[in-house]
Length: 372
Ligand code: PLP
Image: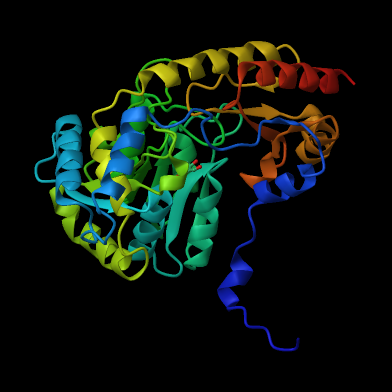
């Protein structure tokens, strides 16, 4: 075929490296799968029942672009309580991924800078590149904390948005109140808008995760139902911001109108139940899994004790992640090389969102490989 139908923008993005690992692993009969980015627990019964009931009641059509009014209200009440915002603007989105897309599309011109921590959640880099923006990496090695001087080193005159992700994928870092306050201060002095990606908000094991929105009013809070309620396939999230940012949220809603149209209606109905449902119990088990991973690996690998999400970002022997990951796959353990999430390839990401026995087996295999 001589004609390429591909748009030029496709040259700026590439397929997720995670999927490449899955393809490599496809031939392995029963690997320990530490590559998964979703919890291993199912949605709470009441939340599932609410979705089924909504479908049965015929609540299957479009909703308003910005979401069901009762859901917008429930979200607004929650963020009002948390941040003291009056009349916050809310947009129910198609997952946090949908929030990121409309959020970045509404704000980033070609050449605008977007700051985020390296290592980062993969979508940030690709979405920014897709829009012709400039990725401005905040180097957080080796402890993955968000120190002010690290942000300062990444800031440029064209910096416009900073994405703050705490608890973080892929490192499991949870930023302290002091760090968030300092980040807020720097953002304010440099007129930078903050997107706070709080998808792992409920997965914080050493105390509640703080939001930068408490310290900075030019923050768009982005949250999702995917991980907390075990409903990654429902595609449900939201954006919320204080009243002065209402115009921005409305622009994002306009983009949603022409892209996702609205978040799935029956799941928006179920979200009303989800917001009333405590997810403490399944998540408490994740604290124990975190301990298992850290205690199991720390004598054989260099790793920072993760404080949240369900990932550990572990230093590979000789700082060479890809060859180590290939060996791990040959020994039936699936992990992801750091180069998927970073400009470096010195670490690998491990997700412990799996059964305890599998975690134990995986730890044993990895430790054996580290000694080999
Ligand atoms: N943000 C981070 C940091 C994530 O890790 C993920 C999913 O892995 C998302 C956003 C996307 O979540 P959603 O399922 O709500 O689109």
